[in-house]
Image (cartoon, rainbow over all chains, first blue to last red; front, side, top):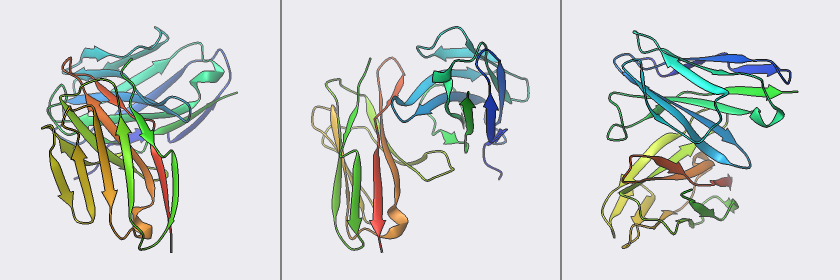
Length: 114
Length: 110
């Protein structure tokens, strides 16, 4: 069974631009969560989607948004990029919503904002 | 903010040595997870501990959840180069949120 895939793996953007990252969950998984990982703040929860609905949201500004499609694939968007948005963005999928199910992480998208 | 502090932040040891990594918080968690993350990859779940005082063993790795469910430790016996990676603890709250620790970067030298 294929794991969680994220595209692109690496991305360089300029301040003020916007970016869209994509995540394809493991087949059969209906929940997708997004995390931001930085050396200073560690791994922080962004949001979780289940059945195309956002179920939970972390403490990030409105510039960070996401959506989930009917095939469970998910995208996250960051608008008006800031230097501090440089990070590894990780996507995790699980069978069901919430934390009762094990999360499987993808390899991440490394975003660099210059 | 639920803060999970891990210590040490960095650890470099020789193959065959033993080590312990700590995960501490002032908050109570309903469960605690340990992950290992290797370069270029996402974290992989190693174990979930749920009951205060619980001890779980995974080959050479021993995980313990504190009695008060505020802290946890990971002990590795006879470390091997394959154990190299970033070890993350993550605590789950009653509100169904997951907070990750600051991480311990372990290097095992052959």
